[in-house]
Image 1: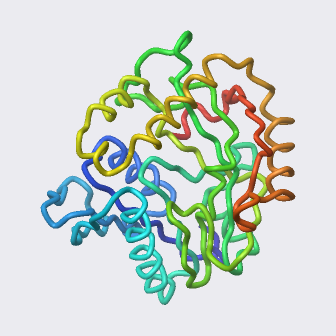
Image 2 (image 1 turned 60 degrees about the horizontal axis):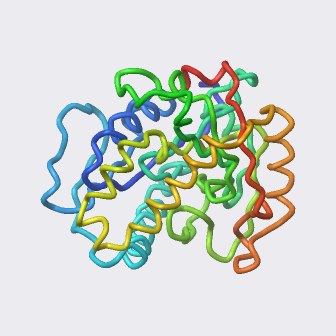
Length: 281
């Protein structure tokens, strides 16, 4: 880090998801340092893991309700914690446990260096890259290997162009999709890789989880299944032009029901990920 580097931390909340938590901690520890990670376990019965030295891990009271009510409760909690952390840090990164904020490798910058150079006054968004399994070309995921050595295709997604970085106390919208009462800007060269669709069999297993279905997760899971279908059935476009065009669209156009959420104007654009990303996550 340079002398001008900003002090940056990352937070997330997770329940019963060691698969992604392990990778989230490994990735953001490399980027920010383990001591700058804050993990909240959703439920006092959740077992505190012992294998992550330096990481701040805290079990909190389970946030009850269906998926929508629980999402709002979780994001309100995380917004409050982020506001507290901003008394110590210059910026806070907030993501779900299956999301990874990635700098364009060609820039040769770490995440800290990129954000330290960015003009972030309230929030900053990244281009959403929804990675999914191509059912005809890719095998089930091997958790011992980097994801992007095994997954080469993604859907460019306005849903995951989230306001993940904040520099002022704000109220995030559910899932970090927006910052309430403020606009958004999607930075060039910054991506939010989402891996919730990384493995078809894993998604099928989640469909069989009764607690998730009762909480209203069916719609989310079906949407992720559709992402895998789109990726498997769509001819991919060249990364450079497609990503830049999608970023411009999303910065210009917002959802009709939410002026601070970007839109892809219903376009379904699949890209092939360049080789330079293969060891990133």
